[in-house]
Image (tube, rainbow, N blue to C red; front, side, top):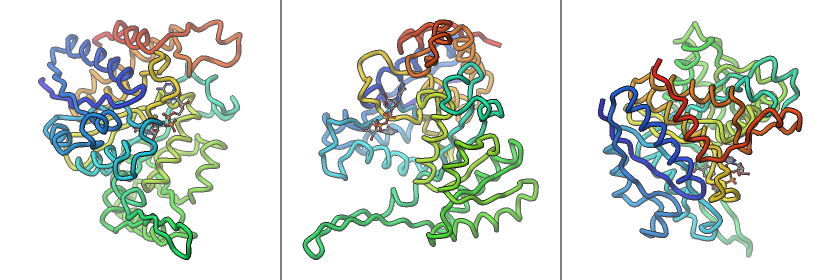
Length: 365
Ligand code: NAD
């Protein structure tokens, strides 16, 4: 199969981790007889420096013309003082909206080899952590009106949170369908004790539930959910929630599995052209030091193969290679055990070595 992938290296550790994912993809193509071609796309701080715009229209068009998009990360201190509409993250929001990818899927699964890297107590980890957060991605407060004005001699800032029934229903359906493919339990997370948008969210979810009698729907307030994720994560199978709540909860869910550097994500809309990216940011604190963990990006590439290109065997081949790497005791700095006795059994590696070891461990099933 021939596939064209739009590649956004971005800022900070972005170029380092994407490079490793491309090495893995090239080897998969060789093993399975595919051709992957890559179209470079500038987005984020590097696009501001080059084009004065975090996502020039021409770059968005390159993504829309591709079979799918692989993204590293964008942003960094250098661009913190630019006006809001020119921030690197605006490029990302514009890309998601332009591609119409309304459903963001973030798995929170602990690799057994990394159980000791979880900050949770071992009795909680032993019960298992394996759930998915389905997050609405192109609505809500991140896409509402933002303004800062002067009133009564002081600055007043406003951000508007809006959801329509249609927007809630389409993400709700993804939640129910994801639960149907797993254990049939869906937890809808909102703040219906305070927000109108959450009351509408809850009503739509319950209306949809009548169409999915095989799925058990529960409701949870977002503040309680933040607590439950650390207290008893084994209770969750699929969580469906709005944009900002999903953003925050999925970072929390990632850290209990060991490291934010391990978690991939997929974002899909109504076509098979998806956006695949690790859930972390550009990590400016470790950029250029070869300390970044590329596994979240490599697993994002695996998700692309599975969900957009219908290449499940190829995706599994990547996941098996990651598992083999962990079995052999190789660890990037972020997943090194804190216990010195455990750490002694592991070998610390950098980003490049991690990518080349995974590439060398790829085996056609
Ligand atoms: P971050 O995710 O970049 O970093 C948080 C912490 O996790 C840091 O200590 C970092 O070193 C560590 N970390 C992150 N990814 C890692 C990896 N692959 N391997 C090892 N350690 C890793 O979050 P932040 O510091 O809040 O944000 C930094 C910049 O990234 C900001 O400009 C922010 O706006 C941007 N950002 C971008 C995206 C995106 O591109 N999708 C997402 C979140 C934040």
